[in-house]
Structures are given as C-alpha cells and as structure tokens.
Length: 112
Length: 111
Image (cartoon, rainbow over all chains, first blue to last red; front, side, top):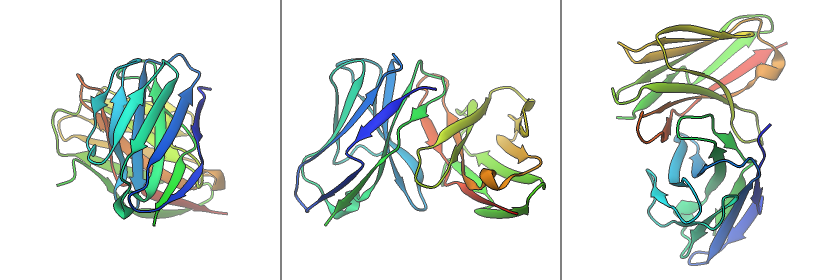
C-alpha cells in the first residue's frame, strides 16, 4: 500500500498567521496534490506537482502557495491565513497522471 | 453548476442489502471516473476506476458507466457495517488528470 504522511495533524493559528503544511510520500510517485475538504464541497484541488521544482495551479489556489522541494516532499504555505481557510487538508500522490491517487491522513487547520 | 453531482446525499441500507450510489457529470471533457471511500477520521481511499462503457466488477463492488449520458453508478452487494462511510465520485480530463470530486454520499449500513 502506498504511503503518504502529513504533518502536523492538527494546527491552530490566528488570522494573518503563517502556516506550513508538510507532506511526504515514499512511493516514488511523480505526482503530488493538495486538496481541501469542506462540508458541502467535497474535495477541491488547490495545487499539484509532477516533480521536484514543478508547480501546477489547481481549482482553488487563491491564498495558497506550494513548493515541491524533492520527489518525496510537497509543502503547502498559507502566508496570511484567514478564517475562510479553516478546513481539512489532504495531500495525495500518484505514479502518473491518470493513476490512482493515494491520500494521506489529513491535517485539520483552524484559523481563529 | 457543479461539474460532478452525486445522489443521494445519504443512504441507509440493512446489512446484507444492496447499496446503489449515483454520479452524473455535466462536463463532456471528463472521460475517466473513480469511486473513493472515506471512513471517519481517515483520508479517502480509491475503490475502483472505470473508463469504458459498461460494468466493472471487483468483489462486492460493481461500477457502471454510460459515457453518452455521463452517468456512473456504484453498487455494493451484501453490504457490511464496515462499508459505512462517505463515498466520493471523481472525474478527470484526459490531458490534465486533475480530479474533480462530487460532494459525496454518506452510506450507513445498519446491522
């Protein structure tokens, strides 16, 4: 089974705060993704990457930056957090563009 | 309009019964479809994918795709309490591979 880990699992910050969510996959997958999950909206794609140094824009990118530093590591950055970014964030990876995506356990973020 | 719509929002079936979940896309660019399942407190996990018209069976799970109507369904026979979860339909475009998820169906299997 493919392995995707996320840290931290829970995070509380204040409005205007700086937050970094981390994701690591040990599957040697090329693609990595960041999603947010909100009640009534399912999962929405924020950013994704097909390799170290690459970044592609997802469907809800506003207020988020991301960086893929290595094949294994993908980070999501909230530089000026807002209450609207309170959500459950998932990272996923896949071998190739149309392959099954494997999800991590999620990070619950609360912005006060 | 949401591009991937799921129905019903919630569904309750008795243990051993058949659960049927539906998904319709409004975007003809979507060619590939997945079903994911998410248990409480966990990340989603892929159940199966379907790319061709017709049925695809994996154990107790059968997916059906009708490309002309952009409708895909998931049928779970002999439902078990462990099948109780949130089920997502997801669709992707051939070139980008980006997944668009529906809002999900909450399935409850009652012992």
